[in-house]
Image 1 (cartoon, helix red, strand yellow):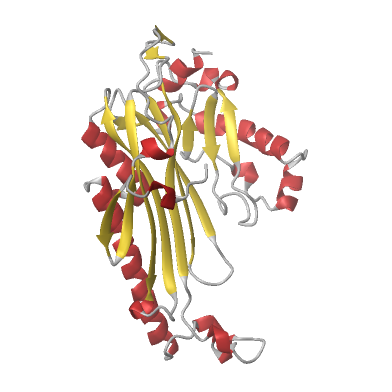
Image 2 (spheres, helix red, strand yellow; image 1 turned 180 degrees about the vertical axis):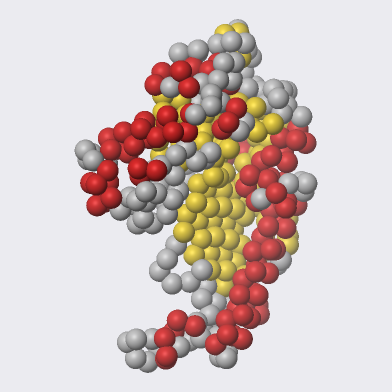
Length: 319
């Protein structure tokens, strides 16, 4: 859904910090379907509800640019934040739930902050780190701002480009999204991408599952019986072979995968009513040039591995 923030003038609050506009946009304006107050449709699946969770969500959107020394002719860092978080829950303790959302997006150092404060603190830290990197570059190169890789002794093509006599610009995009919000569970995915100069960009997916009734994250070990990790290996390999339309591990390696014979579940999972979804980030078992593999393991394929009365076994019984 494409949003032009200019169309919502007067419909959101504006906060100012670091000389930039801080936009707080009610999620009801952006995503009409995300306020979930559906009544329970009965009980099933070992005592979990079939209903959409009674959860009210908002979002904070930020686009911020900071130039070195406040000079618009100099390099800059861009940071884009899209943070979805709960403002009301009829099941879970709201403070604990907000701490979980803050921690999963920004890290444990921010978890005790309110959502808006966490966004502000994270952006300030990002800008401060950028400024420190610029100082380190200058001290390392003994130059007013030429990137280390562009100095003559490191430039194998000869002279440095006159247009490249500056410290690099950086960017970061960080966002979270709820991919499953039913049966007293939230499956949450964080996506983070960044570039610190040059052609290389990095992307990371972090998956989290939260049990609203218990008020705590769901660890992988709670889902399975002992020995599950090696038992899942062949299922993961078979899925990778099918996704990439090849018949052997050797062929996968020719495409840019590595270490597949030793692949194991990596705790980076989501849950939904269909099964368990694992994401393997770039560089984990595959080259950065490939898309991050995502493996859906249907509950029907692993019923014998699921721990009795675990949330996964209850979801499996809904089928």
